[in-house]
Figure (cartoon, rainbow, N blue to C red):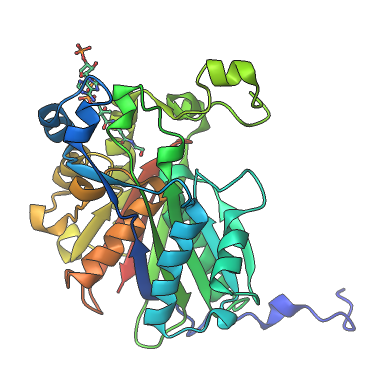
Length: 342
Ligand code: UT7
């Protein structure tokens, strides 16, 4: 028998009537533009190859003294302002990244300091390019359980800090940036309807940054062996990305009993235009439904769908009440799909 003298806070949780909405989004990209033409000076590549194989025309690169926490803090401030939320009222900050300012403390704590959200808990999520959807789902659980009222979710990356600028297979693909979302319960909206997440650790080696952890701690040899840079088997990642995002999308739509035609805007992880097209085709979506901005920013990992969501909203591609499908895929392997009533 439970002890009646012990108060169980969870007994007060009541999901009925509770929803979790994104009340505002914001994003920030660094000023410096790195064009395909500029990359031709660095490695044996060319504008035509990059555009036809990836769709990317340029990407943003953070300044030497601009870090992941700076990018995240700038995006967060914009989102909080738009949501009309005082930083002091943020209960929790969840930041998704694979390029933290340092292994610890969490970049979320560094962002907390930069935005002055001193009443919040803060931690990082590492699910690579899938991180923003993972973080949204975690944040949503805290809102639905009534543990917190306001959760700030951020995807932020300074991928230029782990890019091997001698490897043409990867250095043309990535960029820096950040996006943020404010999660709150809002009346008259279902908000985040569902999120399907998955992972397959058997394929961990096809996309990784091998050095810097307990497996290959930083040392002279790890630097010589270039273990601190991102490595990728592009073709394997490509195939897995198409399959996993398509499957996750179908599962998420089925859970909500929705057809793809009912989705106003599909926002996939901005990795490669050919991946976006293949996923859109497999889902039976029209070209207009699939949002892309990777021509401007390249692949910004955990920031990718967060920046894209913000741009879709600012451009009026989605209005309140519209249905959005977020699709993500990344190292782990990890993947996910989220259906949102905007
Ligand atoms: O964020 C996580 C998700 N990441 C992704 O989804 C990335 C997924 N992968 C991809 O987007 C593509 O696989 C890449 C864009 C990375 C590569 O495209 P691909 O069509 O798979 O090309 P490939 O790797 O098969 O390479 C074809 C050729 C090779 O030359 P050979 O062996 O045929 O002579 C490469 O060496 O293209 C060459 N190549 C380049 N040429 C000029 C590779 N990179 C470059 C380059 N410029 N930057």
